[in-house]
Image (cartoon, rainbow, N blue to C red):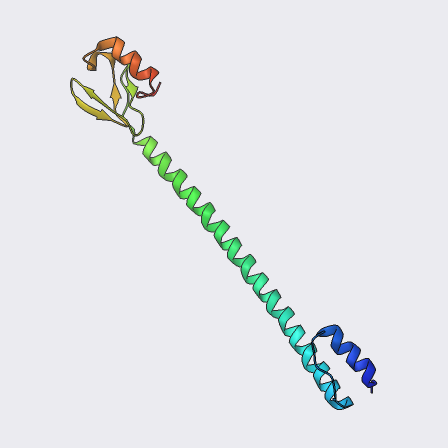
Amino acid sequence: MASNEQLISEIKAIDPEAKTDGLNNAQLAEMKKQLKEAADGDQETDEREAAAKADKEKADEEAAAERQEMLAEKRKKAEAKLPELKKGEHRVAKGKAVTTKKGVKAWPHGVAADDLSGGEKSFRKLLKNEVLEA
């Protein structure tokens, strides 16, 4: 059996604030055993928490990747559904609208110079101001 001094020094190494005054050898040995178990339990809890955090981060990354793939697919489908542009037409930019002789046109419709009341001059101005996509 270890001496009281050895047990006290080992207990203080585990928990510097532990009260060891007036305890006999058996009580000190029991206290050391309990402190070690508590420390080991804390370490296991920390390991479990770290593993759970890593699993959650991995799941979040996978979900983000799936979302990016889904958005890319949606973009491809949307682009595939875009109406065909006739010669001399330019597509109206996203978030923009143009009033033409044929009515108001918005993304993804095309507009040609002869659709505008201002003709070629208005058409060039809309291209310059990025209302129409080049």
